[in-house]
Image (cartoon, rainbow, N blue to C red; front, side, top):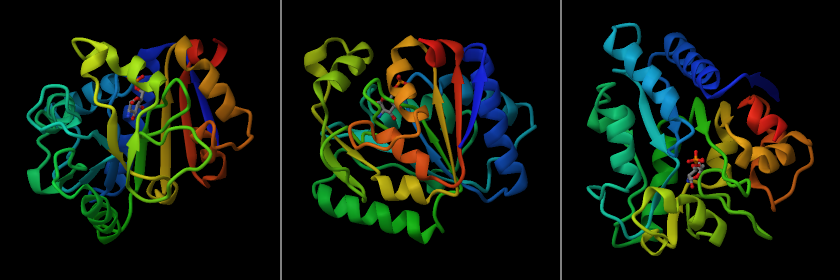
Length: 240
Ligand code: GLP
């Protein structure tokens, strides 16, 4: 595991963007695993600027997002579909047919899970998986618990995640209670995983990850077993 300690959010975003840009430069048809949340917003901004300046070409990439709330239409402003459109897909001109996101409004959610895993495999797996980290150590929406699921699955969000994500909604009651998320297998099978952590609130979860110990009570710790994991964090997340 390579750990990069950055001064602040801006430096973290620069390094994360450079890592993704190098991946796409070396392999223009890369399969990118993408994350939502406030952490990667700065990275997406830099990727969009690079695309707009003609410094990056995303025309041949394929994308798979980690997760989506369940029971939410893609057009809903709070959906991860909307987030990705606004923060990356539109400005970077990602072709609609190259974009994959788990559907939060599918009538058969279980079939959706299987189809999602099959689509990732058919694309040849993920080259680089971008990850944020929840305050409780979740990655994607793989929440802490006695067990972790390997495949794409439906998850009940924990109280702490609902509380943490309430800032994106008008009030806490509007935060969906369930989500659909890529499981640990797709994440661990990504050739490279790049996790970003910023801010004091992430200190405890990040410390668990950096301790080198592995526990399902902090799903991010599984990355200790990944052969090519990059952790990019800022001083606040690292020092608390
Ligand atoms: C959300 C997402 C995760 C994200 C995490 C942290 O629940 N499902 O993919 O990494 O929470 O979000 P933020 O970056 O806003 O702190």
